[in-house]
Length: 176
Image (tube, rainbow, N blue to C red; front, side, top):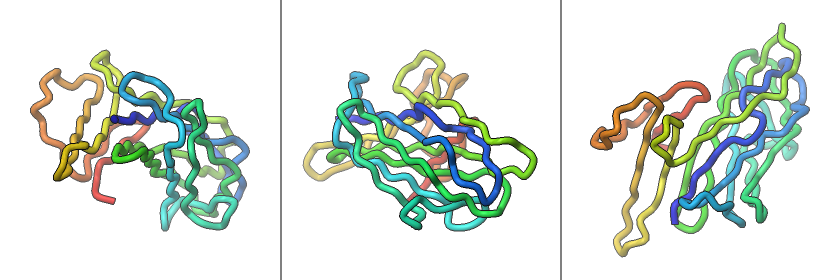
């Protein structure tokens, strides 16, 4: 199985430093056929330093299980007082398949809170940005990794590069 991860709501939201998130961050996990994936584990991870915050548990990591619609949400993050972009690392896992994405929230002294938008990261060759991670089910294991951004050539021979960042919303590929 291959899983895909997309941000449905909340990407790019802006909050005052020291405030609490008033809107949720929602992602959807789908399989390679675009069908929702039920019971996938989705981890939301806030940065350890700089612009950041904590979830309602007081921790920087929250794990949510998707429902039948393939969606998982977090909300009510308590932001710290450091202005700037908050890069939230999101990882979805179902069986041996895994997908990752980064959502950016903004802490700004001058901006009124906004609800943010959505990010689509699908496996297609129609100009959408996508990140597709899949673990091979064959004995001995292995991983397949595909990465494309809009405007990229149709040739898939470019190797993945650790620490690669692409556009807005940001996708960062690196070791955990």
